[in-house]
Length: 292
Image (tube, rainbow, N blue to C red):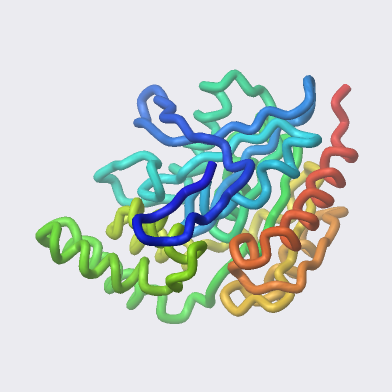
């Protein structure tokens, strides 16, 4: 698959599987990508980060991962072509959506792989639907993202902005979205493709999701994780400091650590380097799963 924009050099994404809509009964319609692997191979459920989607977060990983795994990825609520809802964004709903994807596809158990925001979603997926999750792989993520100070003020700001985006004219929302979500990407072929992916996101949901991630704190229960776990740490991460990623690994019994010399966006800017570590982490978790 080779996405391109008019007047630009095509950005080649070999191995990026075509997506399809998937109806989740009682929840809405989401978007998934599937990369089948060997027969009877374990299934990876890829859970992307904030403001990304199943293409942008994982485009460099599908071909490698499907050597040993069946791969399923999904767009979260308000992201890409994920579920659209008038309800306020909640990480718990995303975890339940992920469980519904597995159920709808007839997948009894999977290894949940969470990147950044996808980390909390994977953690909650294990906590709320433990029978579905046989392993966990966390990437550039943590069990807590910010201090409690200022959260009340942040909540008020996000609530106000969220309401404003509900009533603002489409043209205003488009301008704000371009400034907030799109302008961070450059105008290289990769950057232009990323801009097109980001334009699929719903601005209100992005604001609410950012707040929910910032407020997330699983420290009270993360040590109860009882499935094989690996943590891929971005060692030059300025968004999720490496010490918090290490704290996540230290909190989980026998969690293994795989370090990558990269920033928070390493999945897009250093896909080969990230994919090597991710593949090794997934293999490590799969080898420790008791499938009797």
